Length: 172
Picture 1 (tube, one colour):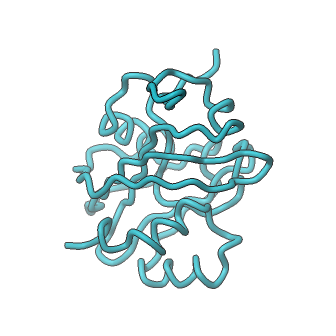
Picture 2 (picture 1 turned 135 degrees about the horizontal axis):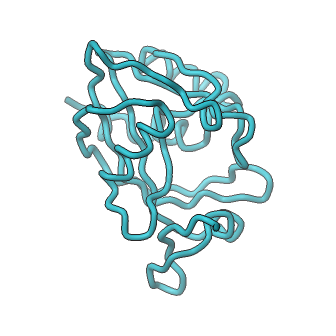
């Protein structure tokens, strides 16, 4: 069974198969989470089996909610599924819309609910190899510099968040 996600078609929000959403460049719902540890943020390198942007670095997790799934529940679910992280308090920081070519004729046109969470001392990362091939903690300002200097190593959405939305996502 294919994954149906909330997308806008003809002005109405309807369930559409995920690959079709990206092939048609339909505007759709998404979530993104930044896990922080002081000035550092957790990034993940997407598994090579991902159907778009494989091997590129992204924020801690990002995905599409299931049809009728609340954004916060989706964020919690994907933190656990991708990174084995549970029990963090997620704070809603912003809603961002962007459109980006992600290669292979696919377009992300997302309306994204962005959350941050402060990692706590006992937070361990257990990456799901089907989703994530590597993780790293990186100073946020250094990451912003790296996304400008070597954009080919990072997902389009991470580059957009750090270039255009740093203040709204990370302001105290």
